[in-house]
Length: 483
Ligand SMILES: Cc1ncc(COP(=O)(O)O)c(C=O)c1O
Image 1 (spheres, rainbow, N blue to C red):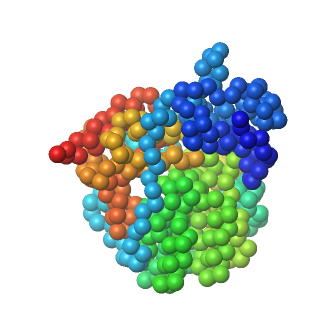
Image 2: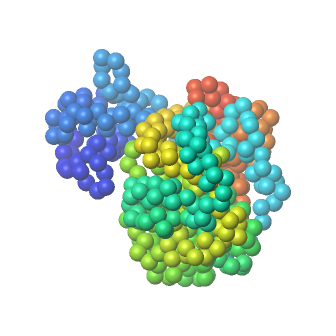
Image 3: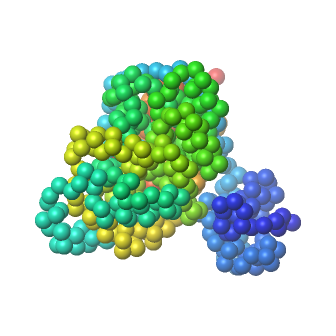
């Protein structure tokens, strides 16, 4: 019997609450793999919710790979979930600040990540077949015709107003009430983060990062002569606040740098309550939070998680994002909402490249204002949900026993933790020979603490990739010497 208590709790919509309840029952073994779950009508009667709500919930569970529909028989718990590998656990790094020296080996791998590969599981790039290229081309042509001269001139340092209006409107979905004047357009999210760090840090300062962290953060810290302190991070719920408190009791920390939703590489999403706690804690200590929310629009459930910025009452959060994961990385259009650091950020932007290219901004503003974005997002979220599930399942199938893999609720990267004996740099080199790119784990830590993990990009996954993943699994297994 399924508990029929309220189905509108928390920030969940009804169908998400129903999906969460069924998923819990599967996890706890109430519904075993291969068994039938209640029919749509049956569950709708039992829970006093509409048939549409249950159908929507089952669609989410299908996308998550937990259940499957069998024609004329109903819905069943997928057999494959029997082999689901466990998720990685938080690791506890050294909590002392350290200089970042990305050595030649790591730098060479970084340079190599965007090299085309037959099976591109390396760089965290979106699937090019899912980019809205023809609609974007039409938008570009339309704005080039309408704003020919303006497109050839500098716009303001803050960027085109049309785009800042669209960004401010869409920010409501992530719980942020901001005006276009609070937005500054950048050339991608990487520049937004770099300018934010420039705005609040000075050489020698210590910056707290997740562990593992996106290597772009480490590149910035290294280049600006800062120190990093790595904070243990939960694969589901993000940075550990207790460890962070320990760090600020011991060392002065100038800023925190993290990816708040569907992070890279762990896929973690900080729950709302924890976001609020973090934002308040940082405000109390006057430590700016540089929040990278580049994957926030890619949640599989369809519900947009809040940005930490939504809880910011003092202007202490510098929110950074871009359209690189959703619309077109090559347009290099990103933005920052830097709160009370606006003047410093504007100065940094001006020094860095005066302003961003005008026409790509106008084209994206046109695309957003014509309403195509939500439809586009629904499509890509669905595909990425399936890809992530199928790739994680395949890791369970082909990688050596003891391998763990994350199950992110959005975005498109997976973090795979293999048995201790596997050296991920060696695996990267062997895979490269086989035409497969992966990202080895030493890139994600200033102290190179993760030796036996890789990040896989599931965006390009297709059934044809299965053989490549089997090859990767075999290569990993071949590194384990059995007595
Ligand atoms: C977390 C994160 N931030 C920033 C970037 C870079 O974004 P952009 O291409 O918009 O500069 C990436 C790209 O991989 C990323 O994963």
